[in-house]
View 1 (cartoon, rainbow, N blue to C red):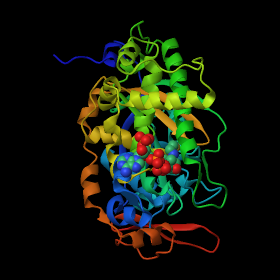
View 2 (spheres, helix red, strand yellow):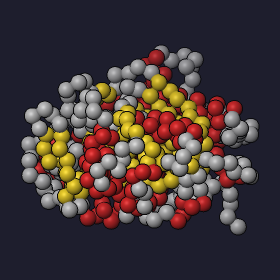
View 3 (cartoon, protein in one colour):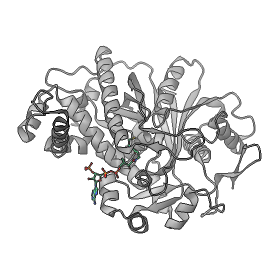
View 4 (cartoon, rainbow, N blue to C red):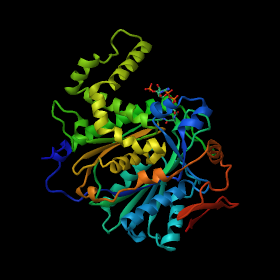
Length: 460
Ligand code: COA
C-alpha cells in the first residue's frame, strides 16, 4: 500500500473548486555554449568550479533572430498546441520579464501579434495583457494575481502566465557563467489537471541594491555575493510569512514534534544557478528545524549552532556562523532532505542556465520530466526577485497530472547545436546578424524600424 505524504493525509475530503496550473510548456533556444573547454579556458576558470561549484554545464543562447518576445510566443504556441487551447478561451495573458525591449508597450501585445499570424488576425482581441516587472519574481506575482482573477471569473475563461528572459551579464564577469535563456508558459484554470494552488502566499520585501538594470543598460549591475545573501534572507522571511498564514488557514498545522517542511513533498526555489538551491535549502531546513526534534539530531552530529551571546565579536560570530553553515550543509539529515525534496528541481537548469523569472517553473518541468510528481503531493515554491522580494506558496498535485503528455525537453536539449566561443560572443554583443541555425516553424524578429517598433513573423 502506498504511504501517503502528510500533504495527502491533510487534504480535505469533499473538494471545492480550486484554481491552479493546468499545464505548462517550455521553450529553449536551439543553441548552447558548453561551459567546459573553450569557455572555461578563455576565462581562466577551472571547469570543476562551473560544473560543481556553480552547477551549470551548458548555457542556452538565443540565436540572432530571437529575443524575449519570440521566446514567449514560442512557449505560448507550444502550450496552445499541446493542450488544444483556442485563443477565444484565453481571458488574460500576463508576461513576467526583465528583458523587455520597450519601456511602454507590453510584451504581451507583441506576443499576441505573433500568435495571430498563426491563429488569425483579431483572434485574441478579447484577451487582456500586461507586462510585469519585479526581477525574477515577476512571473510568480503574475501567477498570484491571475489566480484571484480566475477564482472570480464566471465565464469559461482560462489564463496564461508567461515567463520569458535572456539572462545577460557583461562578458568575463562572474555573472557570465550563470547566463541562459528561455520561456515558460503556464496555463491557469479552475479545477486544474496539474496543481491546485492552496492560495496561501507569504511575502517578504525590502529595498536592496543586489541586482538592478538602470534605464538604457543591456546588462544588469550585480553585487553577486550580496545578492546571494539577499536571496536567503528574503526567502526565509517569505517562508515564515507562509508558515504563519498556512497555520492560520488550517492548511499546515505541525504538531509539537513536526516541522513545516515535513508537509512539503518537493520544494522549488528560484534557480539563478543550481548551487543556489542548495544554499537556499540549507537556509530553509536549518531555520525550519530549529523548532522541532530534528534540530537535536543535527546537533548531535555537528554541535550546537553558534549564538550571538557567545562572547564573540561581530566578525568572529559571522565566521562561526559560516563554519556552522558549511557543517550543516554536509550533515546526513540535510543531505537526505535535499536529495528527497529539492535536488531534482535543478536538473534542467544545469543544461540551460538561468532563465530569470521562469527558472522556478523550469524546476517544475524538471520534476515532471523526471517523473517525480505524484497525486496528492504538496509542492512548496520559494520565488525570489532581486531588489528584493520573495514569495512562498504551495499547491497540491492533482490526479490528472500523471496523464499529462511529456514535455519532450530532454530530447529538445539533446538536439540543440553547440556554438563556438566566437559565435557566442558575437551573439552576446548583438554583432551577429545572420542566424546560426536557419529558423523553421518558429517566430523570428525580422527587424526594428526607424521608430523602434519591432517586426516579427512566423517562419514556416
Ligand atoms: N571546483 C569545485 N568547486 C569550486 C571550484 C572548483 N575548482 N572553485 C570554486 N568552487 C566553488 C566555491 O567553493 C563555491 O562553493 P561554496 O559556496 O560551497 O564554497 C562555488 O564554487 C562558487 O564560487 P564563488 O567563488 O563563491 O562564487 P563566484 O565568485 O563565482 O560568484 C555568483 C558566484 C553567483 C555570486 C556570481 O556568479 C554572480 O554574481 N552571479 C549573478 C547573480 C546571481 O546569480 N545571484 C544569485 C542570487 S539571485
